[in-house]
Length: 97
Image 1 (cartoon, one colour):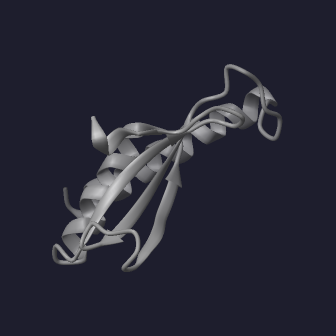
Image 2 (cartoon, helix red, strand yellow; image 1 turned 135 degrees about the vertical axis):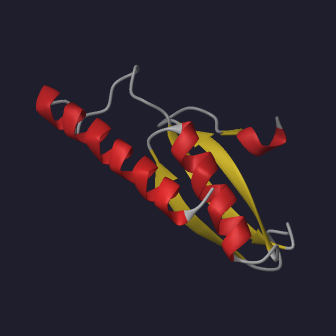
C-alpha cells in the first residue's frame, strides 16, 4: 500500500464521520457504536523495547492499511498490531487472528 492509497482511505473515513455527524449521534455512546481500531507499533515486535500508537481508526480496513504502511515506512524495525476496542468491553487483538 502506498501513501496515495492510504490518503484515499483516510478521506473515506472522514466521509463516514460526516455521515455520523449528520445523524446527530456523534459525542454520545451506545451499545451499537462502531468499534474503534487502535494501531500500535512495537520495536522488533516487543512492547517492552519501544512502542507507540500509530492511530485510532473507525474501520478495520483503514487500521490495517495504516499498520502496513507504518511497518514499511519504519523499514521493518517495527511490527504493527491492530487492537479492536469498544467502550466498556474487552479488547480483541486482530493481529493474532
